[in-house]
Image 1 (tube, rainbow, N blue to C red):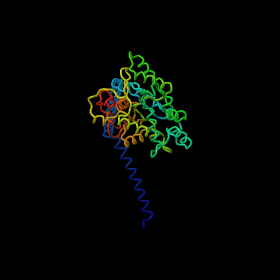
Image 2 (cartoon, helix red, strand yellow):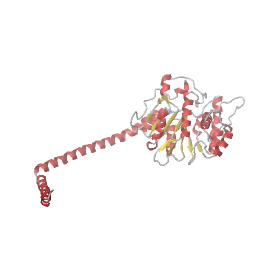
Image 3 (spheres, rainbow, N blue to C red):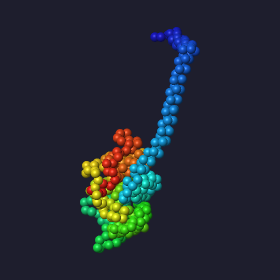
Image 4 (cartoon, helix red, strand yellow):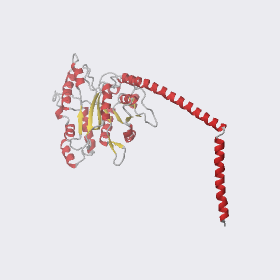
Length: 375
């Protein structure tokens, strides 16, 4: 067993060693060798810092030049890329992103239609009394989920382009949008359209074909009633917060619309009008130099999109359902990607924050952006 003297000697040895270490450290630190080494190290670090700072300044200047140049190129490429396209943008009321997406569509020559899901509301009714009321207007289909029934009816209404017949020679849109009217009246959605520029363009034509003249009358009614008309594109930016979480999930009702809309497009059941005044056919004449295989791999009809902080679950839904998606859609690459994916760009999921894959799609093979409608 160790005695007191042993412990005392041990403690004294420890403090003696510590004192010697301090003295040696002070002595060595004071030598010219250490000072020179320290000075050289500081000088080297300062040189590296200056080089990095200069490189950063150069990159900032280069970015300042390239950013407006990229935006100018994107603007030139997207001009009239979405001509004769009517695109629904659906999202939550108050989401400023929807307006910015609409500007992208209009800058590319398309017609944006804003559909806002109202606060504390779902797109489709869920309460028993509301379900009973809407079923008086839209009867259930045997063996079909009722939400799917509502989805198909809503797409029928939004994609309808007036075709005059002997029984209905003039449009009567107030009677042909029962579900849209009901959803608006019950406070589920609001719809904002502006066909004034298109109506002005049609009015300026020297001569209108009978069909374009009929479409013009229908457009005037759609403008007055604020209704989607002849829709052939769909942008889904609708997400909802996950309870007790900071993340967002895709709105399932809007996703149903996106999936059904994509299917209609692939089956060539979406309208397409040449509003130049010379034509007014549902499918224009002519062809392009692209093949059926090109079209099979291309995106024309539906894009899911949101800002990076809200896009994780939306992107997952896009991957699970083979839909195209764009993250950060308001950047220059995002604007290009959005327009490209509505006009023949390669299907996929794109964005600056992608861990894998491309930031933007290759230039579409379809030089005009509407070949799928002209097959």
